[in-house]
Image 1: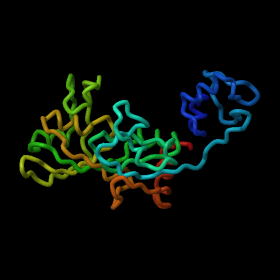
Image 2: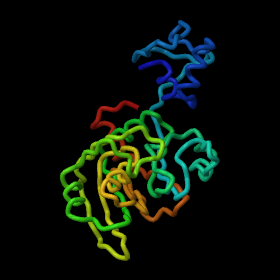
Image 3: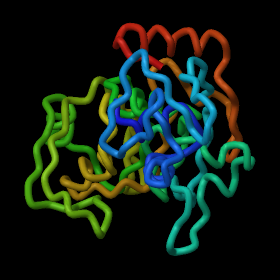
Image 4: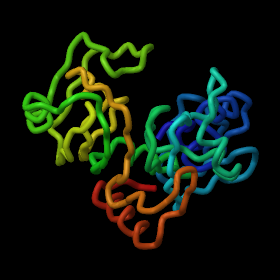
Length: 253
């Protein structure tokens, strides 16, 4: 593991901050001053500012009910409210597992472990959403949910500044259409990917604008009755399921 990644995984410092500490000669691997290119082996001892950096073996995770109108970011150059403005200061250094966009709401996981954040973010665990789209979900849309979809040279539903014009969508794991009324359709979908604005782009391809999007579950974790703007730590049973997932995927933490 690269030295800056090791530091970020086992301390409060980010990789960028770790790079600065290394440049200042404040990091040693065993008895040698570390270089930016150094790798940390299993039995190496890493010292930061003269103190040995212990490998983190415990981690914490919270479920936060993200509100509409919040940015999942440390700060916003447009001055918009972030999730960290709502959460207590103790979570200022915690990492979100992926993102929900400004207009979306629902279950968002945060953790104090970069290893856990990375593992969950790139997993194929199920994500369950409730949506309201403007328009009617016709047979063509249903077939795309069943069989998958590929788009090219298209930005419908994407962020205005995105440079990604092509995207492949796997078949939905499950979906349920609740019906249409007043020009809108409500539905529930289950997917196992976490691409940027994935559902907005999928339905946007069919000129269906997503008006409401709420994530209610991620893997074995669900939002339940947690109110918007509130958070809770995982329960013991939920931690057990998470550790089972990490073990099954041979992820060391």
